[in-house]
Image (cartoon, rainbow, N blue to C red; front, side, top):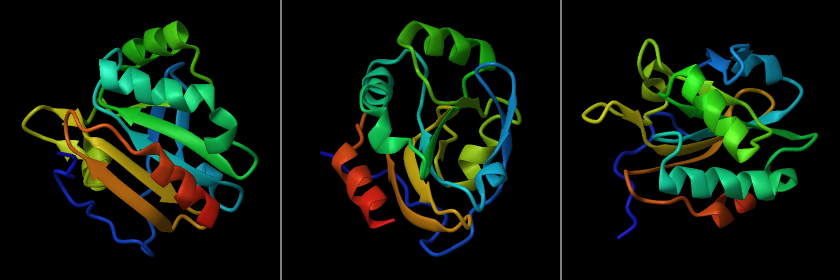
Length: 159
């Protein structure tokens, strides 16, 4: 049964919270740095090196131009530490930022309604943010519930 565990705390049409997190190389990445230039597809995921997460992020990697291009930037976010994200990125050949929401643990995930506190992990939340920082589409799937990538393509096409 594929049912979302939680509803995102943000409503379509709202300006999303800004954040700055470190990527897999230790560089700071701010959501607001894309404002006015590119939409952003925020992809929260539970754990680096886990089966469903690897399958999902490899699907982005293998068809990256559909999700990341001159108009859209992919930012993948988990509560893993930077070192784990770096090792996973290198092992899988990811060419998009993997951001660490490690400390304060899950703060960004929580602000988007994509944090599962009982397990200390991000849920599979996906948020499409337009160039003005406004939420245009979102879905949050629970643990063990893979994403429907066709829904992303529809949301991106409607942008």
